[in-house]
Image 1 (cartoon, rainbow, N blue to C red):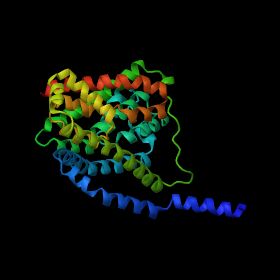
Image 2 (image 1 turned 90 degrees about the horizontal axis):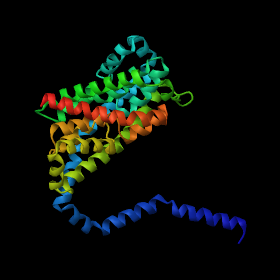
Image 3 (image 1 turned 180 degrees about the vertical axis):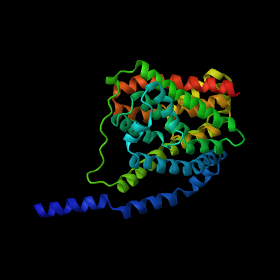
Image 4 (image 1 turned 60 degrees about the vertical axis):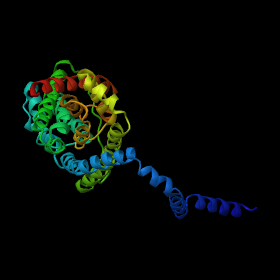
Length: 330
């Protein structure tokens, strides 16, 4: 066989392996052959319950996630970091609560808050204030609070409690950083956009990235919530929920593991009806401040040393403020 024939044979094999028509045909044939077992599986009560919870959570949460992504992309692209440096008080002790409150009027999900906080530090904002904004922006902005009100109808105290506990945790972490933090622990890395990329392109690029990224975590969180409701024996959940300490710890750890976007986590929390409002409040306060994806983003933006010190302290402070706030508003 000549070299030309061998080359044609290789190209023919590559085309055969990557033929999308063939792949689609095989998928359709498999689906047709398996429709009987799939229909019987979908008819089982467990799976119907699972699908009901999953679809309800996703449909309720998705609009808030999209709105939050649009607003956070606009903040990151169109508002210069130097604006915050000029607007905040010069004294760090006062800049911390002001920066924390700024999260209430400047929406941003946690996926966007990390690079924004890095840009704030590079723009001259004191690190303690940047830390407060990093934690408060995804937790107390209007989109998140509105989603919480929708997810907990008839429970306005959950909105008040989430706002108070999240703001308190943000300020405590900012003041702790002012007192104990060292400059060499916080080293924000430059965030580079594509060469020649305009603001419009950067905006839509950020929207596409965050929708796909946060949407994936939303689907994963909805699947986990549906599994807890439909598959895990209710006796296990009631046993965990019956002990206040275990309930708070369990939902705090769950918030870290699920890594749900803050615009959608209220709908997950509202579905965990076996647990007390205080335990679910801990889920809502801890999740936007520290989870698996945030740990990775913080390590990439500020350095591993920062993330390793920041994450455990944030977890304890966030869970503690949630418990104290829940006790006050009970």
